[in-house]
Picture 1 (tube, rainbow, N blue to C red):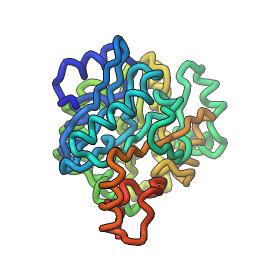
Picture 2 (picture 1 turned 180 degrees about the vertical axis):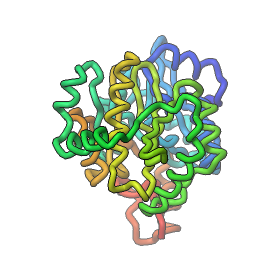
Picture 3 (picture 1 turned 45 degrees about the vertical axis):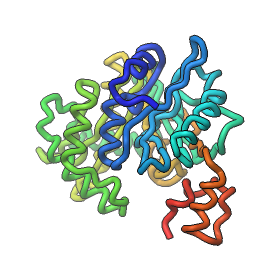
Length: 329
């Protein structure tokens, strides 16, 4: 189990495709937010390697940081590496591990280890397409709204000076409250400051202004040709103007001009095929399955913990809320 700053962690990032969710500074930020310990499970087999970022909670279990930080390294090693890792984690006293797989980097999930749960699909935009091809893939209602916004003079741009970062944070928290998001998503100012500090010049703030006011904004992160649409928000006063449509239209052109290969929009809430997924699906036909992997490292102890919290629950069913002993009453 590697801490941030370990040379092996940096070596894996240098050698293999990864996303910003795998960066030690980002994992440390998530650990501070969730009050866990930032670690990465690291397995070597000859020249082959696997690295899996984790947040260790109360010395009891581990989960993935927020996002898609699935295992990276040699794909063919993943199943055996996770089995070996489970033995190691059990020896460290951990009972379970919840892993969010990366829809693109883990397109073929490891098999034969743990329980794999498919939640739905995510959406991405192939930036190798021409601008015209991307426009053709855009759903008609999105095109109409984007054209209307452009006619009315709505402006989308990258805020290189971060002047509107404070406004974005305020709008973001208001948006999360409006949609009934849990307290987890009400990131504070320290989190947003840490996010920018940990990602440096790879994170970008895209803003949409309407008559000089910030109507909406979003964060985009570049990592080796892959751009992640991370967080976004819309001011309640401008919901009817649909500023996020203009923002994503602008962002895909901006990301393409910078030589990136793919813009990943993500999926619905919890990976579901909901209204958020439908919105994103209107920008592209590219789809990627999203899975989570549930690992029970100590079945006997896991069963005891589940039954102590939910006496009628079946500890062997790990397809729902996981780990079951942390499920709400």
